[in-house]
Structures are given as structure tokens and as C-alpha cells.
Amino acid sequence: AQSVTQLDSQVPVFEEAPVELRCNYSSSVSVYLFWYVQYPNQGLQLLLKYLSGSTLVKGINGFEAEFNKSQTSFHLRKPSVHISDTAEYFCAVSMDSGTYKYIFGTGTRLKVLA
Amino acid sequence: SQTIHQWPATLVQPVGSPLSLECTVEGTSNPNLYWYRQAAGRGLQLLFYSVGIGQISSEVPQNLSASRPQDRQFILSSKKLLLSDSGFYLCAWRPQGFGTEAFFGQGTRLTVV
Image (cartoon, chains in turn yellow, blue):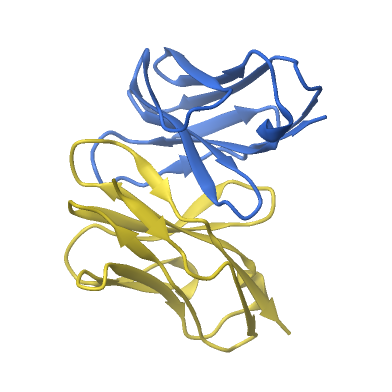
């Protein structure tokens, strides 16, 4: 069965500093990978996704992520964060065949400090 | 365009009472539908998903059940709520096909007292 691990439950970072949020997955078949953001008491919205092709994926709000098949990772990065990036970030994986399950990690709470 | 509606936004229910949360999708047909529960520190736990009317897959044995009586309607139910059922419940839909993104409702904050 597939699973998703987000290694950091909370990440504090100062405004305008770079940030990396880590995501590792486990699956016996090929997967598609996603990052979502959740603001307090709201649903989730998509930041970016990797389906195939270039391993560096660019998303909204200046975020990007790199797919590394050998390390089974899909880490999210932003070169310079803003206060408004304070939110919870979720990594998700779906299989590319056989099932329509859609699995999320436990989330990383990003807190941007002034 | 497609929209997803989830209600109510907040709910306070006594232990032992029944539960019914409803989710409807507009502007698409034959969506894949999902119910998740979000508890503090536990991320998004997949509870149920459905690929068609009457087709429900349960991911975690629990006190809840789901039904899909119509193509774009997904209902989460319980006959008797437990304290541990408290949490933030999110409904989501995805277009058919692998690799599609999910679109989420605004969630229901359930507090069992």
C-alpha cells in the first residue's frame, strides 16, 4: 500500500528566508504527487502537482517542488517566504492505476515570523 | 464551472446522537468522491471514497458510514456519535482518471460533547 510521510510537523522561518518542506512517499507502483495548502478552518487548495516529465514543478505563489524517484521524495521549496505563506501544507499521492485512493501526509505547519 | 458544497459548517452534537453530513458537487458528472477527517496532529485521514453511485470503499474501520444515493451527492453518517468522532470533516471530488487533482469543500467542524 502507498503512504506519505511529512517529516516536519512544524517549520518556523523568518520572513524573506528560504524554506523547504519535506515529503517522502512509499508505493510499489508509479504515483502522481501533489502539494496542497490549507488556511485556518478552510478546505485545501492545490499548489502544484507532478504527473510526468520534468522533475522540477512550479506552482502558484512562488512555490516549486522537485520529484526524486530514487529517493522517493517530493520536497516543496520557496526561495523567499512571506507572512501570508503561514498555513498548513499537505503532500498527497495517488496511484497511476488500479485504485482511485488519494492519500495525504500528516501535514507541515509553516509559521513565517516577522 | 464546478463547485462543491458541504454543510453544515459547524455542528455540536451530544454523544450517542446520529450524524448526517452532506456534500454535493455541481458542474460535473461521475466524479470520484471522498470523505476525510482532520484531527490535530494526524493530518488528513481518508475515511471513504466512491467511484460511482452506490459504490463505497471504506478505508478505516470506525463508527461512521457513507452513502452515495445520487451521482453528485455523498453523505457521511453515524447512528451513534462517540467523543472520538470530533474533528474537521472534509469532502472532496476528483474528475475521473488517474493523476487528477482534488477539489475540497470548506469543511464541517464537528464537536461531540
